[in-house]
Image (cartoon, rainbow, N blue to C red; front, side):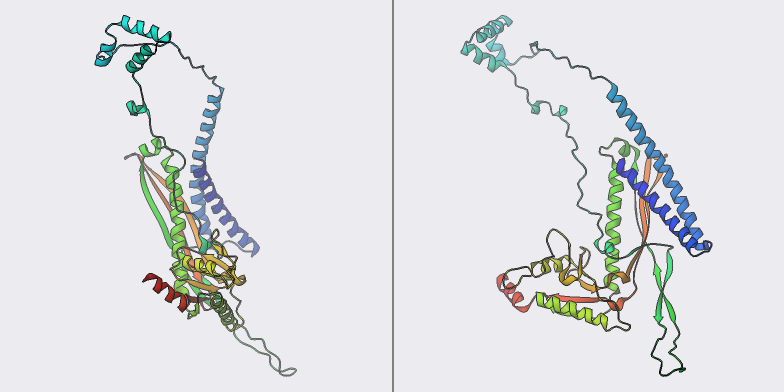
Length: 412
C-alpha cells in the first residue's frame, strides 16, 4: 500500500506544482490568466480533487492497519503447552509385519523394556516396527509460500528523455515560436549614415501531443486475496511500461528528425575523434555561430565498441566508457546510451535544442459493482520537438577493413 500511496501523492504534487507555475507566470507578467490557462487549471483542479479522495481513502487504510498492528502488540503471547508423553495407538488395520513381530500388546511392552535395558536385538525389533513420517506423507500441510517481491526486468529509466530538457505539456496542440530572421547590426560607414536595419521574423514550430495509455479490469477477488497485492504490482508495471513506451517513441522521433548527411568514419580511436571534430566544425559553420555539440547519443552496440577500443599498448582509448555505467564523456562529449536506438545509431549535437513536453495523468480507477471488478488504467501525454535539426549530425561508424577481414576468416 505504501508505494501505491506514494505514487498517488507524487501525482498530486506534480499537478499542484503545475497550477502554481501558471499562476506565478501570470503574476510575474502582471496579467490575468488566459482562457487556455484557466481551462488547464480547471482540468488539473478536477484531477487533483479525484486524487485527494483516493489519497484520503488509502491513507485511512494505512492508519487502520497501524492501529491493528499496535493492538496486536498489546496482546500477551500465550505460552505453548507441549507434552512429553508418548501415545502409542494401534492402527485399525495394522501392518502385517508389526503383527508378526508383536502378536499381543504384552509382547510389545516386554520388548520395549528389554530395549531400554540395552538389549540390541530388542532395540532392532522396535526400530523395525516404528513408522517414519516424512514431508512426502503430508504434502497438504506444506504450502508453497510466495517469497519476496515480484521479479521484473523492466526499468523506469528513460536515458534519452533524461538527457534533454523536460517541460510541462500545456495543451494537446500548440506552437513553439522560433526566430527565422534576426535583426541586423553592422558597422556604420560614416557619422550620420544609416545604420543596418532588417525585419525580425518569428515563425512557429507546431507541436502535437501523443497519448500513451493502457487499462486492465481486475476482479474484486483478485484484489482482496492476492499476496503480494495485485493492485500494487499492476500500478508499478503500468509505470514501467509507460516509461518504456514514451522513451521508445521519443528516440524514434529524434532519429527521424535528423536531416544532416552522416559523417562516415572507422570505428577506431582516430576515426571517432575525427568524426566528432568534423561534426563540431560543421556546427560552427552554421550562420550566426551555432553552439558546439555537447552530447553523443548512441545505440548499445556503438557504446560497447567505444569502450572496447584500445591503443597499441592495450590501454583503453576512452577510459570514461565503462561496462558498469551506460554513460561516459569521450573527448569531453557527454555519452548517452539508450537501448531503443536502432543498432549503429550515433548522433552528436547540442542537447538544449531538443525538448520533451509531458503531462502524466497517472493511475485511474473505476469500480464496477455489477461485476465485482475494478477497471484500472494509466495514461500520459507527450510530445518531442527538435527545434534545430540542422545542428544534429549522425555518425556512421564502421569497423576497419582489417577487422572485417579477420572476422570473415575466423567465421570460415
